[in-house]
Image (cartoon, rainbow over all chains, first blue to last red; front, side):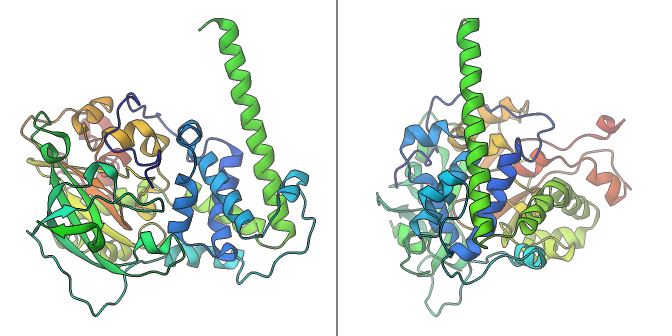
Length: 219
Length: 210
């Protein structure tokens, strides 16, 4: 979706302000919101692309005025309610008012370390052949789906060079909607700064994205 | 802004924060009562990223690559198994690529769409990495962003920005500082900063340690 999350090349946000000796979390609730989000992935049954969509899918004014963990928390509450695991009145009451819905798995303390260590690899076996090879010139398609995509607006319709064939990976545009993993070939595509930003751009800048084959066409 | 406005603004922020605090606590209680989460598991998740997983992990990887040419070659060829040799792997680092800085090429990593970051080697991202100023400008004005960090590179150095749009996570391998011949990996690791592994900074120099 063309939401406020797609920030590449936007103007007006001002300078970057690094915080010296920054703590990992800035408030107790941030820690809990972070941990709840990770832990609820298991009983909630959503995938990472669904949670990314739940975060970006809000009015731009909200997205830009909320802190990072406020966005995480809002997405978490949304996904939990969407699946009927918790209701509004329960959050308002601060207590469970109904019996739980059956869930597949709950993250136990004993499983935390190995679950994190395993992570969620996205590479998949395939018997298809990659359409592009390193050095090929490609154009990114002009797509504007209302649903989740990982093709940033600032590269759409631009010509770049395939730098690396990464492998076959879960396709977020399908995975986020519940349409399945639909694995696709993934490439690193490099763009010249002037191709993206015009003739006045710094000629020493090169930008790359990782792009799935359905985002690309040959030139 | 007058003093009154400032106070008002501050109160407003404070009450919003309290509201969030109350709401997060309420949801945690509901989820715990329903048996969907175990608060001990939540504590462990927090402890992992507050105490165990952070940029010191990445610093060990970089220092080893500086000290050991065979390891450096393995890291640049396929970083995920090379990093797993030291024991770092997993969530948000399932597919890691190491990017070598040279006198002609400087690499810098961003996620313009959200906050993708190599957790097993760098921990959780700092606020600036997730914020609009960095995400918007890194791809269009990297030299301007570097200036915000007090970094200035030669005019002819190529600056390569890696936008983390898929599940590939990038770790910058900065150039080894001069005058560090014969240093141990432990001592070299002290020169490696978090920002030097994102590409928004450079490693410390030996004189910075004194």
